[in-house]
Image (tube, rainbow, N blue to C red; front, top):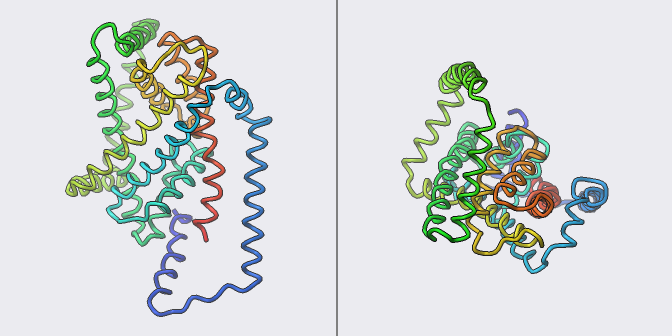
Length: 348
């Protein structure tokens, strides 16, 4: 919180400078120093990207990109950028402020880069809170707005899941989506059947009361009360509520479509455009399962869950792994350098 609150001083200074105080002209030394740091930032970003492509987590993904159908790459990049635009729109709706879209979108790139090293979305929450504080939002209200943004994502994703499953039934029996959605449900039932009933009952008898007790304590805490009050305030602003829910669902839907395109881009997956809704549903299920494990950015757990979701649809393990690596390389790792550069720009 001290780090977030530290952003109020530059914001106040910037506001006061616009009411009569003349901004000091940067000297040549200051300009040279800024240019030097900018060049160092670009070089550091290039070095980190090169290391990730050669010996880091992007090495296998880079080899996978060499075997993809390149016609799908522009759509993947566009959907990845659209994801961050939707995130910026959702933050504007939750805060109730007319935030500049370009700057807010750059902030989402920085927030995503912070999420790569922090679990549970803590990095993104801190970046967005400090950004709102620097835009003149009080610290308490900024923290509530960010918490409301995360809370609103749950019903938005549930509505999106219902819409995807509902559209899958519209095509009728025998359609590709209906076949693959049935396969997804069948494999999920098989996985549930692998758990013995007696240990399941014992675990439920122990974990359920503990979860209820923890939930009651969390609901009575001050942060939870502030989040509930903030969500109630958002509900009294129907336009902002609709914007937040629609943009939150848009971020997930953009990633789901990008995931489907990634599967279509890999030879050997044996899927076609008719299976798009089933692939989006597989992403929603896999992403939800992967986020249940609080690793930084969901690294490892998300990839495993997405590969398992594709395997449930009958896709071979090799092409499924290649599709997931391609998807994560374009939508997860590629924006990190942009987030680092955007962080430098936002700090200035």
